[in-house]
Image (cartoon, rainbow, N blue to C red; front, side, top):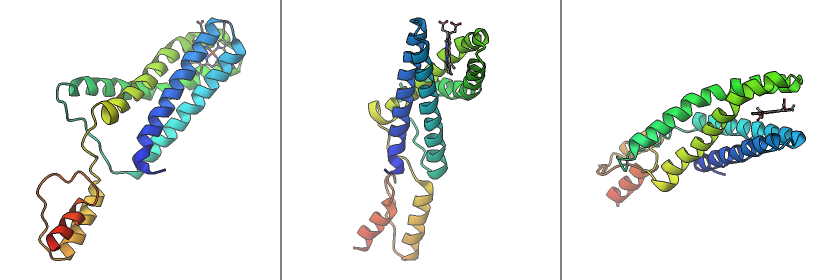
Amino acid sequence: MTIQQLPAVNASLNFLSTIFILAGWWFIRNHRRKLHIVAMVTAVATSTLFLGCYLYYHFHTQAVTRFTTPSFVRPIYLSLLASHVLLAFAVPPLVICTLIPALRARFDRHRRVAKWTLPIWLYVSVTGVLVYLMLYQWFPQPRAMHSRQIQTDMKTCFSLSKNCNTSGSPFSTGYFIRNCSQTRG
Ligand code: HEM
């Protein structure tokens, strides 16, 4: 698997969390306690895996994919992203505060906290998938610029003491190298 595939993996993990959170809620509404526990613990596991993959992706790539086009969708995308990110910070502490009383069989307290945790967690999971779909599937943006890769390519290019044709936008890794090769040829 390549690092460029991780956004799709992350979105799938968010989607799985959404399914398990909804299932857990449906089970408890239908008095299926054991299934509620299994679904919620699985949702915690998929969300934790998502967090791990998300952090790995951002520590291992300089790629920044910005939503630029179409411009009329941009405000919608940015509002969705802002609400997603802000609420995402609240999810780990809320989940912990929901799990602890449940594990201590303090179900009155568990229910009180869970009434906040469940909708917020669900919103964050659903918007996580939507943000991915908007950025990569519905409105695919120009490929992310890997700034470090471009710098390396430029250094290599200049060290060859050739004229580098840098017209146009370097949206892909290796752009300068390809351009220089063409110029040299
Ligand atoms: C973060 C994960 C969890 C969330 C978001 C969650 C969510 C909820 C919600 C919203 C309710 C109330 C349902 C309603 O009244 O309509 C509930 C009830 C309940 N949950 Fe969880 N739950 C989670 C994990 C767990 C775990 C790990 C256990 C067991 C160890 C558990 C056991 C129960 C039980 C027994 C009830 C029923 C309490 C009662 O009827 O008084 N839950 N949960």
